[in-house]
Image (tube, rainbow, N blue to C red; front, top):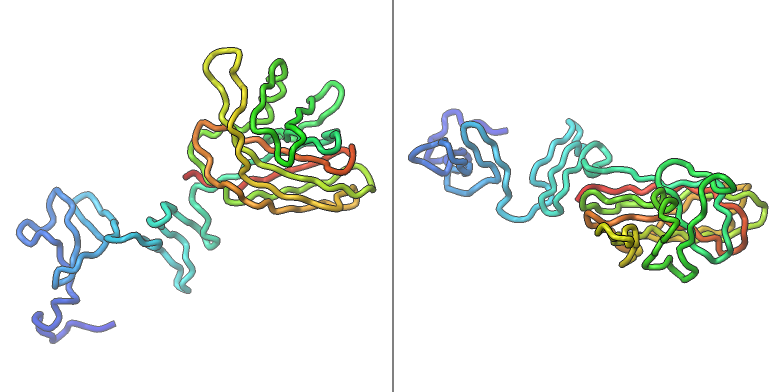
Length: 261
């Protein structure tokens, strides 16, 4: 680094920093910090406030690094993100889990996977809920008298969120190889105080994927493909699994990585 020692201000003023208000200096209103020839920086100061505001969109407005140059904290104003840690994940990253034990399917039918805790299906336990037999799960659903079972299948979205990744772990109870199809969906849910409360509409595929050769001798790991990453506050999210091959029991865990938008 250079030194200003012994140098005239006339020759070094461009490297000096000052506030833009050359009459009042630092006052109650934030003042931009400029160099000696008036070029603005992204810094603004007041007696009790420090503000960072880029003059143009930039994905590294504020950056903290280790001595070795590893990014630890990044304010990305271009993409509206704050990233933290050596892995530089969004500071608002969360994990959502869907999981189930012993879903007994009909081949070619989509089934809801319960959110969070491992639900066991069978007599005296949870009841399977179907989601259609098309390529994708159905885009609307009227649970009718089975809304008590649907409660455990839905994640209520409390804020705008962005899906970053979806990973599935699955197996079954047979040596016969199966093909599993997975879908993560978002829906609008009626909540108007009528008998329509809980009905789902406007289904959208958020992520999907397929696993082949699934049997009880393996634990299949599948990364789903994101199809629509943004989910608005007030919607609900559901996860589905389909055994395309036969009626072998499905054991499944789905991890959804997302961040608050």
